[in-house]
Amino acid sequence: MPKLQKSIQKRDALIRATITLVNNDGFHAAPMSKIAKMANVSPATIYLYFENKQDLVNKTYIEVKSTFTAYAFKTYSPTLSVTEGFELIWKRIADFKLKQCEEAMFLAQCDNTPIIDEPSRQEGIRHLQPLLDLWKRGKDESVIKPISDYLLYAYAINPLSFLMVAQQRGEFSIDKTHIEAAYQAAWDAIKV
Amino acid sequence: MPKLQKSIQKRDALIRATITLVNNDGFHAAPMSKIAKMANVSPATIYLYFENKQDLVNKTYIEVKSTFTAYAFKTYSPTLSVTEGFELIWKRIADFKLKQCEEAMFLAQCDNTPIIDEPSRQEGIRHLQPLLDLWKRGKDESVIKPISDYLLYAYAINPLSFLMVAQQRGEFSIDKTHIEAAYQAAWDAIKV
DNA sequence: ATTTAAAAAATGAATGTTCATTCTTTTTTA
DNA sequence: TAAAAAAGAATGAACATTCATTTTTTAAAT
Image 1 (cartoon, chains in turn orange, brown, green, red):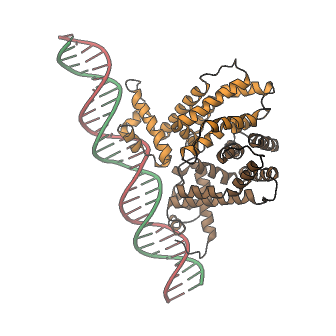
Image 2: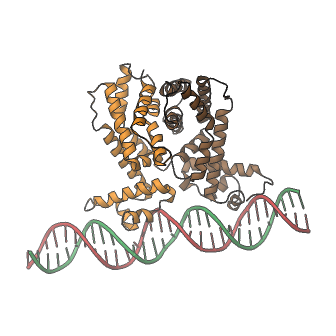
């Protein structure tokens, strides 16, 4: 266990290296030695900051997810109308996924594989509460379809992950028009 | 290279074992020895059927993707109207993703990680052509929004993967009502 | 301010294990 | 009975993690 002494930067470098290597090579081809090298650190040093490889990946996931949700809800306030609030959050999320694509790719990989353990996954989900609250309000006001939050997420938010992954692979390039069209499709899918 | 002599069943068992183990443990924790054991085969035998581990996973991916698309387009005919054709294909896809969840989970994992190599991924995409043709027709007839096929896929088809993964993890259980609602959301998202 | 020694942080080089793949032998098929 | 298929054991590389030292930091004493 590390005393919180000196270097938050070293921890940060490790987290960043993990993101990059897992994105490019996959968990199975991202050895601790390579992560250490990319972070300019000895392999042994990793174990001063994290218990083991699983812990490193779990913590990376939670940290990235927090950054993501913090960004998504930064300018949101529950005093906004449901329609305005949704557009605001949706656009922040789109922004994050398309600009911080390293982080977003990492999340997509974690969310579709068993590399993260269950408790860490649960913790990640908890951060989305403000969006769920907004949806509840939307359903109460009959502005949003009365369907499960999973369906709402699948249709309103998750498509952005698919687009981001495609863009990242160079199959597709997203411009301002696409964003507007995507927003429209998201809203059409969930509005009453 | 295997002579096509005796056992297609042994090859099949290997493919199935790969799907199950990669689903449950991830590529990184699915060693050849475990795959062999689950398929009731010696590790050395794998190499009579596949060049190496990468080849095994690539071939598994292509095989599952083919099964998936064959199922999706089974009852489709280009003589149907765009609306009917889309509903038909969409429902077949939903059916596949929710009933053959092992296969669908495997595809979701491959589509969001770098475990499959680029040529195999490309080959997987090619199988979707009938759906792209339908969408082209839909756009020409102004029945479907004039937006990129990637956007259409992201909003009309991909959400099913998200729902399937959530269901598979036991977070959410999909019933007939959900399917109808999901179909409606998909159509609302892409129809003009 | 400078010195000093104890504690913390960091390191490179082991360690022991696990794994993909190959080798040699045995079994099955034609 | 020869060729193909399959097997189990062997091989060597790669890996996660630990170990034994060295370097850096902290702060108490001068």
